[in-house]
Length: 153
Image 1 (tube, rainbow, N blue to C red):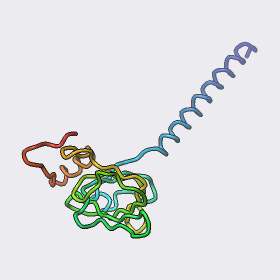
Image 2 (image 1 turned 90 degrees about the horizontal axis):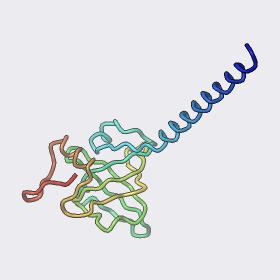
Image 3 (image 1 turned 60 degrees about the vertical axis):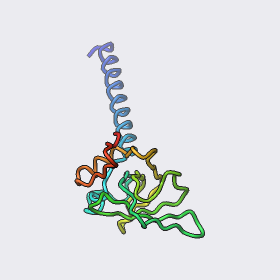
Image 4 (image 1 turned 90 degrees about the vertical axis):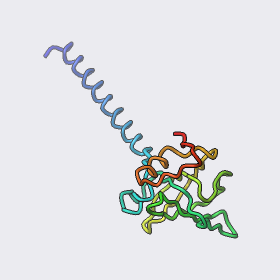
């Protein structure tokens, strides 16, 4: 093989190796940032992974919100009207958070089946429901409809 072809071969191999490394690192980084959505039924049946960042959503169960007197810890339950899941959150809840409303929480499911939330997102008006929550409730056949209105997606 003459020196000119050898030099081209090394350059091509270097470029191919560099692209492979870049694609591998990108896929690894994207894999770390994926937050899959799970409904309370999927969590209760064991479909959701433990110790992995996920999103869970549903309606806050009436009478389930319990606040600690000496800290910002809050325990509540979410439901898709089929199953319920306990959620623990330490922090300030959104102003629009209340019982009977749709929320999406981001966090991890612990080994006891309690969802440890690091972020809680509440709906923004009386007609809106997060798309993932609405889809999960529709699948369960439990979609609540306010007086003749449809939820926005």
